[in-house]
Every structure is written in C-alpha cells, then in structure tokens.
Length: 292
Length: 271
Image 1 (cartoon, rainbow over the protein chains, first blue to last red):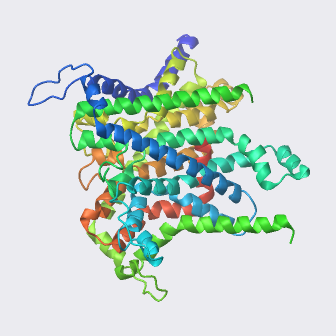
Image 2: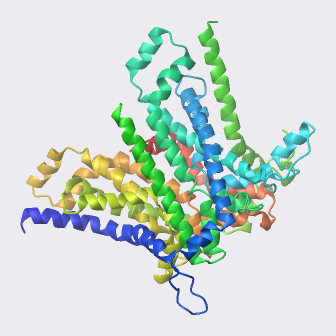
Image 3: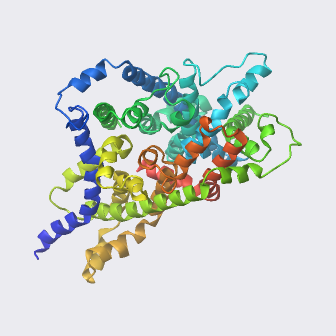
C-alpha cells in the first residue's frame, strides 16, 4: 500500500474504537436530546407527536425551573468566591515551611477524595435538629435549635457549606502548583525590595495566579451542573424546592415523573449553559494571552 | 522576636486551626463509629471503644457485594479507558489523517457536556441494548474519555520523534512502536490518569443510581445512599461505620500515596 494512504488508514483505525463510544454516548445523546425536546411523550401506545416548541413554552411557564435556575446561580456565586479565597489561603500557607505541614495539607485535601454521598451522610447528622452538632453549639450558647435542612431559608446554605468544604482542598492543589511555578527572580526581587507579605501577595502573586483562578472558576461552575449527590441524601430538592438544582430537577423529571420530553428540554438547557460557559472560558483565556 | 517571625507563627496557627476545622467532620465520624451509639452526641474521654457498629452495618447491608461491584465497575472502566484513549491519543499525536482536526474538535465537546448530563438518552440507549442493570452499562458511557485522550496526546507529542523513527527503521509496526516507545515513556501520566479515574469512578453516583436497580450491580455509593437515607431509620453510629467502611480503601490509599495522589490531580488538572 502507498505509505501516504497507509498513514491515513492507520490513523483512522486507531481512532475508530474510541470514536464509536464517543458517538454513541456523547454525540448521539446530544443530538437526540435536541430532537426529543420537540416531541410529546408517547401516551397509551400512541407514538410521540411533533409539537414544535411547545415543551419550551412549558419550560418558560414552569416556576420550578426558574427556581432551580435561581438556586443554581445562588449556589455557584455563593460557593465559588469563598472556595477560591480559602483555596488560595490554604495554598499560601501550605507552601511555606511550618511544623506539621504534611498533616495540614492532608486535612485540607482529604474531603476531595471522599464520595459526596459519604460526605452527605456525615453532614446530615450535623444538621439534625435537636441533637445535631450545630444545634448543640447553638444550645450551648443559649439559642434555640433550628431545623437547618427543613427550613427553606437555610437548606440551600447547608448544601453550599458542604460544597465549600469539599472543593477548597481540591482547588488548593492547583494554586499550590501555580505558586511553585512562580518565577524565582520575581519572588527574590520582592524580598530585596522589602515588600510586606500581604502587599506582595496582592500586587504580585495574585495577578500571577490569574490563569489558575480562571481555570478554577470555570471548573467550579461546571461542577454545579455535575455534583448534586448530596441533595439525594439531605433534602431531595425540598423543602418547597429550595434546594432544587437544575441537574437534580432533570433527574426527577426523567426518572421520578418519567416525563422524557420535558427531561430532554432540561437537558438542552443544561447543555446550552455548559457550552456557553466553555465559550466564555475560551474567550477569557484568549484575551489574556494578548497582554501576557 | 522580630515582627516577621511573629507573623509566621500566627499564620502557622491559623493554618492549623483551619486544618482542624477541615478534619473535624471526618474525625467526628470516626468518633461516632467506634463508640456505642449513645456517645454519638455525648463526648467523654472514658467512652468505651467498640466495633459493634461496624459489625451491625456489615450485617444490615450487603457491603461485600457493593464493594465487589464497585471494584468491577472501576477497574473495567479504567482499563478500557486506557486502551481506547491510548489508541486515539496515538492516532491524534502521531498520525496525520484526513478529518483529524474536526474529529479532535468534536471530542472537545465532551469536556463541556459529559455523560453525567446526558443520562436521559443514555438510559434509552442502554434499554435498547438490553444492558440496564448491568455493570457494563455503568462503564460504557465513560470509556471514551476526552480528558484521557487529551492528557495522553499531550504526553505522546513530547516523545522525541527520533525514537519512533529508530524503531521504524528496525522494522517495528505502528502498534509495536506504540507499546515499545510511547507507552513506556508515559508511565507517570498513566499513573496520574489511573489514580484520577479510579477515584472519580469509585465516587460516581448519579449514573450508577439511574442504571442499576439490584444488589448484584449497585456500586458502593448507591448502596451507601440507600443505607444512610433517613427513611431507613438506622442510627448515626451505624451510618458512620458504614460510611467509613465504604471510603476506607480510598482513604487508606490516599494516606499511603498522598504525594502521588496530589501530583496526579495536579497534573491531570493542568494539562
């Protein structure tokens, strides 16, 4: 065989096994979701009918969808800045010489490797009214306990605390890697100039960590559309839809209400958001490279 | 004491305090699991130690089977990912074929929309393939991993072409070159990818929850969610014991190979 053609053939052959599974479980479902979202559910043996954008009209009038979207935004913008600040702080601390550094780093990072279900099991007890840890603390100081997860005002915040606890250590390692990769001469220059530790961090380290921060922010955003396991244990979307996040709502629609058409609509919404985020990340990174 | 040394100590103290707060939930779970249920809310240094909670948890739910399922699912997935992603990455890194760039861009989509969000259609596909409630069904959507292809391709590209050329001159075919040159030079990436993939799938929940519905297929996370759900009425000491049992392999692995874990996650994230 002509060696040039052989290279094409080999290239394709090597890619084919992966390609089959990429198409079957990523590309086909994406296209199929869009398609299904334009049809009604099959009822009583009747095949699905083309209904155009009717399912999307239903979406716009669905208060639970808007609540879930709002919750997703609160969840993201409530957890991400806190997580990032803590992650930076942890990284800066662990990056210096100190007694017991290995223990401190392990303590920060351990929540990351635990499954969210296990974490939720543990935290559930903290939030238990009357006997949970938080109520014990409140009662110790003479305040009445409260039903943390049963109250729409506090339930989402309870989930957010867990997310911060789990993710801060994970993002810490990216900052740690970035800190260790900082140019030595810049650090040395700062030391010779006698810059204060905080001033140096604000004016030199923080801007240099910016690419890491961009990476972390977008990863954290994507995670809010991926990690919803704790909701299953702690609140199941309640009370009063206060902890309904989009992916959880998608799960309920598809596998509790068995409303495939509407689940397809929600899938399309989530896909659109994720692709917009990815595009935004691309644009941000592209703009940064111009003045670097 | 000069001021900088003073601040150094303050920072160390703060770092320790935060570490204690971060470790507290897990330490608390240990406390509850190793003491009689009564002591879950009463701290006392003289509280008797016991393994009864572990025994009861082990007898309440089929943990052994759940572990087996998780191990089967996790190893199958990671092994198949290694094979498929290695071949694809090799193709992208070393072969110049028609449509390669478009194919690569299409794979990129999976970094944005993952099988986790596509469960509705994937469930239908599994139904059509008659695979619902089987271990392959948990694995299959993940075995072609864009992340894996990227990671390995990046690494293969750094392998000097001269090495591959030398092997070719000696008459080695494409697969021999892959196995004798590229794979051995990428051991550390495989370790990193393997660790990340195993811990990711060990912890995976939503898709396994959807696609399994019997004891013989359910992985540990799904089993644990049934075991620990409040409707079950199992007391906290036993839930803690069950929870610790199910995270033990990963936790022990992490504490033993902490450096490898941290470096793997770092490496996998930075790309």
